[in-house]
Length: 144
Image (cartoon, rainbow, N blue to C red; front, side, top):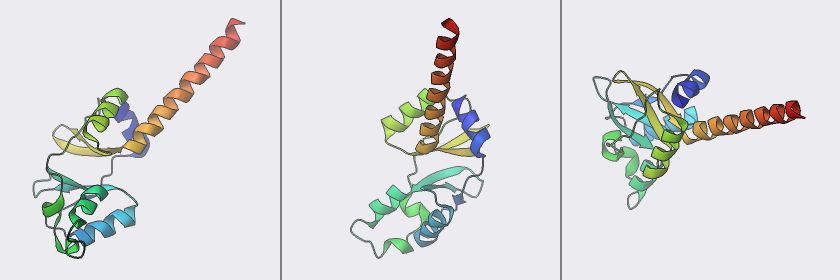
């Protein structure tokens, strides 16, 4: 239930782009929203891909000047790993580590329902550790 907890705290808004949007507009969107990735939605609002800062940097290799004229479709990661609201903190960490990704779209009932970043997972883990430490202090204080 870690994903559901994160979404309750941060909300479910997701910044999206169309496959035909050019890289310059995507870069502007990333900067304006201060985010590291956008989800690419097709005409039926299904996830077609994801464009991260890393995708943009890779596309710039060998053609930095020309990349701004490419589209999301040209540079996106088409095989998108996703999670569900029921996924746990452990599942998120395993998926992100195994596939070396920092952003996971959340899918519920076949629809985009949010976005989880590695920063969200770290924040959740820190909150869990603080809660455990507080519980341990209470236990120790009551045992004496």
